[in-house]
Amino acid sequence: MKKRFTEEQIIGFLREADADMPIKELCRKRGFSEASYYLWRSKFGGMSVPDAKRLKELETENTRLKKLLAEQMLENEVIPDVLQ
Image (cartoon, rainbow, N blue to C red; front, side, top):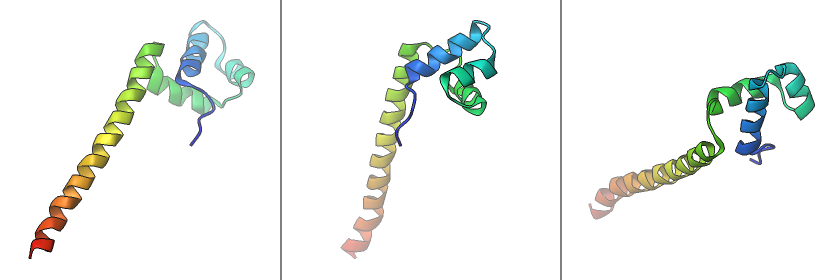
């Protein structure tokens, strides 16, 4: 899924709102919904750009590790059946 805004842009939007720009005006001006704003605020609120990049790296690594674990668990289940 292609995202419309990068983490850097999202953090910029959140900072604009922190600088006393009305949220409705910010959403209209930048082309996203208020629901998106509040979702982003819950996820990225208080983060800096390097923090967001690190979060994305960690999420990617976590996904990779979960996939490896699932494959290993599947192997561990299949091997005893094959040996019998």
